[in-house]
Structures are given as C-alpha cells and as structure tokens.
Length: 426
Image (cartoon, rainbow, N blue to C red; front, side, top):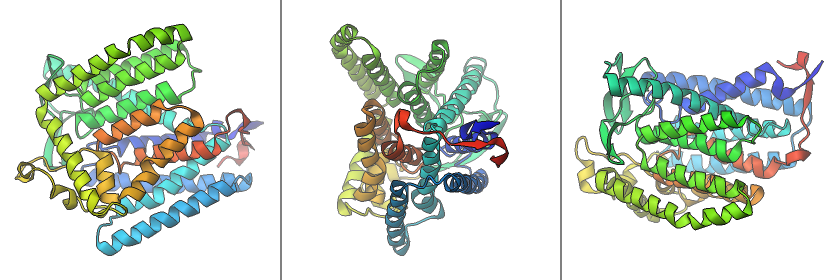
C-alpha cells in the first residue's frame, strides 16, 4: 500500500509539535518565565533537529534538493553568519537570537520546502491556526468565568515582561495580566489568554484569522469556516485590542471585496467611506480612552527611528535596546516605568538594521504579493508588525520563510506529491 508522505503519522506529529511550539514561543507567559523558558527552548531545539533530519532524509531519498533551495540556504546562512560575527564582536548577541536569526530560518525554510514538494505547503500554518482556535475557545470559557463569577486564581506565575511581575493564573490556561479597561463604551476585562498581555493574544488571534481568510483553501464546510471566524472574532473583541479590531475590519472588507461579484463589489466600494469613518472613530476612541498606550507606541516609533538613523544598515546591535531607550521620554525610564518596546518593525530597524529588516520583513512580503497576487495578507501582517513587538518571535520568522518558499516553490497544480511506502515512514 502506497500513501502520500503528508498522510504519514510521523510527518503530522512533527508538524503539530512545530506549530505548538511556535504558538508557545509567541510571547506567552510560559515563554517569559525563566524556568519554563529554558525547558521550552531546549525542547524546541530538539524538535527542530528532528524536523531538519526528517526533511533531509525525504529530500535526499527523492532527490528534491533544487538549485534554488541550495542557493537560498547558502545565501541566507552566509549573510546571517556575517551579522552574527558583527553582533558577537560588539557584544550584542545571545544564544536565543543566534537561533532565531541564523539557524531557525534555514530549518523552517527546509521544512516548508518539503511541504511544498509534497503538495502541502500550507500545512504548518493551518495546524498553527487550529491550535490558536483551540486556545481561544479555552480562554473564552475561563474569561467569562472570571469576569462574571470572579473566581479566584489557582496560582501565580512570575514573568519577565518589562519588569518582574506576578500574574494570577487559572488552571494554567488563562492569565489575568491586565486590569479592566474602557473599550467601545464598555468596562471590560482584557482577555490575555496565556500571553503576557492582551495585544500579544490579539496578535496570534489576528494572524489565525488572516490564515483562515487568505491562506486556507475553501475546501471546508462553510459552517466550519464560519465557526472558526466567529470564535476568533469574539475572542479578539475580548482582548480590547484596537489594532486587532482595526485589522479584523480591514481583513473582512478585503476578503468580501475579493470574493463578491462585480456588482456587489461596486456596492462594497460605495461602503468604503463608511469603513474609513468607523476605523477613524475607532482610533479616536483609542486615543481618548487609552492615551497612555497610544502615546507610548508613538514614542516607541519615534525612538526606534531616531536610533535607526545612527546605524541605518547594520543596526545598533541585536540586544542593544539601550540604543532605543535613550530616545524615549524620560518619564518612561523611571522605576516601574514602561520602558519596554512595542513596535516590532521599528525595533527591528533600530536593533538589526535596515538590511536585515528588509530581508526578513520587506522582501518576502513583496515577493509573496508579486507571486500570489494576494496583497491583503502581507499588508495586514505588516501593520501588525508595526504595532506589536513580535519581530524576533519564531512565528514571524516562519511567516517570512513561508513567503520565500511560496515564491520559489509554489507551483500550484504542477506540484507533484512525493509518495512513499508506509514502511519507509520513520
């Protein structure tokens, strides 16, 4: 009996593990707890080693090492190694960032390349999306219990997020990291799920929504897709994240505009001013009710830009956050002040430099748009990057490598699935 490789249990198991750890390292409270972080990082390294070995085994056996793949890996690794030497010499490297910027991109690019070879280029992102939806359901359930019934936390966890803070946890699946806020005229508890803060929860929810709308092929039953979108949208609202809601509205507009008939597109085009007014009012409401976070984000962008200008090409150093902090408002640097960064794009510019930022967060987005003609996904993802400090997360690097792989290897119907005997699956 011959089966396709992507129907093999080991392939699915490795893929699920990678997706789960991409989720777990996306600024969750566990990732920012010292004890858990070391264990998570160690396990993830082992999983990546297994994935790269499995990929090389399959690609070698079926002779699928294309010249484009080899040249990309050699070119990227050579460039990343030179950047590592520069940062190591300046004293601004770390074990984590060596993995994030130098080793992990090649590993995940190889894994996704294998997936495109077997006709399942979207497999990893789809599993990641399913994990996000599962945790969204769990967080909603506990969120309403905490909000309406005021149940007591089961334990406290110390995390390093700007400073050392103790956050109350509920069954290990929900953490109340922030107080209630005024949002759209309502006094709401911020649903941060298992993340360090609500905007981080909003980031993965928004990313999952973008995957449902713009990456996943419409092969599912419509009721299932509607349920997924509904869960993600409701959970997004409970995070009270203006950025998440902003992108959610734009995503729905782009999605319906792309899928409707010409006549309905004209009607939707007439509604564009209404959408713009809603978004402007949303921003005004955010400015009036959450001026603190709004001003902090603007100050971060300015500070990041000012720091970047000093070293526009190679940056100030991977770990040199002081280069940005010196341009922040003085009030943010006091004891218990908010000196943490909030803009991933400007942090990337200032710390890693313009060249690395272009290679990781500009060039793949442009190439993907050019190849797929899907402009909404990279544009909305870029807005997320500007407003959320996710530039050095494994999931953002994965998205960039996915876009590169999609540009080079996604041949659509011309992709020939690799087949192997079930006894050959390790």
